Structure formats: C-alpha cells, structure tokens
Image (cartoon, rainbow, N blue to C red; front, top):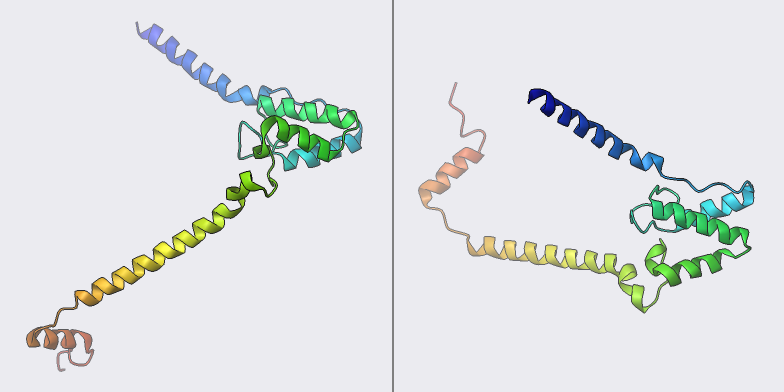
Length: 165
C-alpha cells in the first residue's frame, strides 16, 4: 500500500515536470537563411500580438499558433508580399486585435479613447469623494465644551504640558 502511494506520487511529480517542460519543445519556425527575410519577419512579428498569449508579441511567444503564424508570415515574405499586404491578410483573418497599434476607426475608438475616459472618470470620482468628505467634516463640526477646549490646548501647547522643574 505504501509502495503504491509512493509510486503514484513519483509519477505525479514526473508528469508535472514534463508538463512544465512542454513549451520548450514547441517547434520553432525554421529560418530561411536570407537575413533580409529574417529581419522583416522579426520587425513584423514585434508589431503583431500573439492571439493565444495576448500580452506577448508574435516574436516573443512560443505558443503553437504563434509559431504557425510566424511560419506563414515568413512564407508570405518569401513570396514577395509587402508588409502592408501581410498586415491586411492577418487583420482580415483575425481582426484588428492582432495589431499592437490598431487603426483609428469606429470599431477601435474605445481602444484609443478608453484610457483617457477612464482617467477622467477616476479624477471625477476623486473630486466628488473629496468634496463629499469635506462637506461631511464641516457638517460634523461639534463645539467643544470649555473643559475639552482647555484640555486640547494643554495637549497641544508644548510649554504648558510640562511639569515645572
């Protein structure tokens, strides 16, 4: 019984280690050998978003789809297509999301204006909160009794709070 449990744990650890190493086994796009093609591929891949990772460029990602897209972009470069034609082909296929700098148009307006609108909304919320807090503090202003006032003055006055020497 104990031996079987130990064997199960060892298999589990082995599977976890193998699963962690799987991204390292991803098949990379094979270079063509032409440095100009590879430079164009690198430049284009840095401008395109990985559709799987979404926070990495196509050049930085090791996802299978990213490798496949790099291979397809390389094939189109070798076929003589321009960078603009390749970007158009990708956006027709995957939408403007594939571009790190999508064009300014009606469907991408929120991508461009969203951060500014969020900043304005946050500043307005801050202003309203501070204004309400100030109004509440003024409304809660309670008069101190004469004894409380003398005690507060004694606590705040450094000379009066000391004992004579």
